[in-house]
Length: 131
Image 1: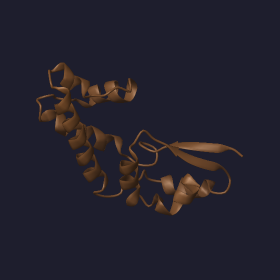
Image 2: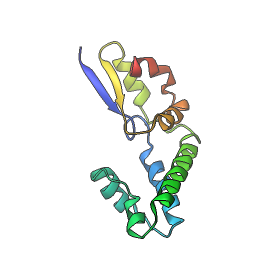
Image 3: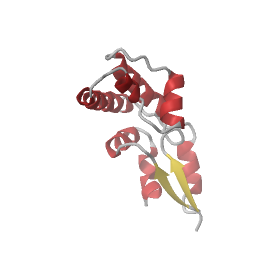
Image 4: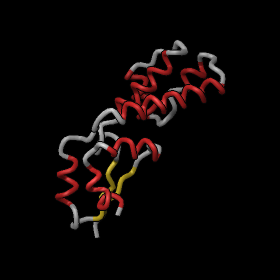
């Protein structure tokens, strides 16, 4: 049977802008200005951490850890604020249900994934996404 793997962030739910927003917010607290262009290049294209910018500015490792935790908290709060499901995603999943196996790939933490889908409307589809 044919299998489709769905990328969670940006395909099923529109969360990448929220992650940028949370990261930008915490980096501003240590005087690091993160632009969307930098975020795309460092995080999305290179797959590296934008916190490297803070390291370059002399921010110690313990503070970086605190900033990451704060970023994760802000990101979770943003995720939970409402549904971020991509328009049409649920309909596509249901149209393929029973015809192909489907799964989700993501670099999201499980807690963030769960928060993003708590209001996504895709809850009804979880058995076909994960089953």
